[in-house]
Image 1 (tube, rainbow, N blue to C red):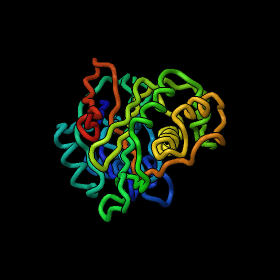
Image 2: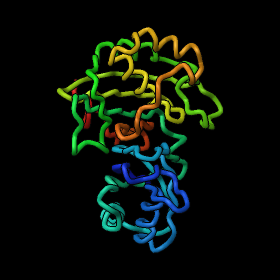
Image 3: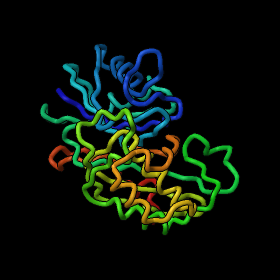
Length: 261
């Protein structure tokens, strides 16, 4: 049978999602925990890999098993074998054709900025601290230039292995609540470090270093060297993943977390 699970993790102490030799990853710890429940090897495929230091609130993964357990047992048993910074939030049976990555219609990421003159002793690894005052209206104006389908070569990591740089941003918003500025981006897919490169640009616009129209110039240039520095991973969250309704996959919408508008 094929099962899908929802996964949450605080990524500060993980070297990303993907299993890698000699370092701590979310995939390896989840597979180890679920293999204990199944008493056999479990291999996971996720909706989207996250980089080192990046968090997830609505990651989705699937695995195949011939072992029957109640859904509750997979969740409870898995969590009992997991550390506090990683957990399974739901589990359900899905058709054999379901694929966590290939059937995803859209993914939503949120970038959370702690915007205060002095740093926080608590939020250092769950947000990105920007001491310069940010104007979220200027950031929103710049973000609007990125809506729609474009070649996002200016926003991809140099080592990105995606075959095409074309992606469609379906929604992009910037909101503020007191000392927090949140960038919410929904797209049909993302290039490596695309969200963090967008965040870097918007931070420069919000702080007054660049004009909002600069976002269009960077986009049209198709050159990574034209763009701002990549924003830190500590503020980035994989918030939710959308799937066709027939699969019944729970979608933890962004507004459940950081969308305060």
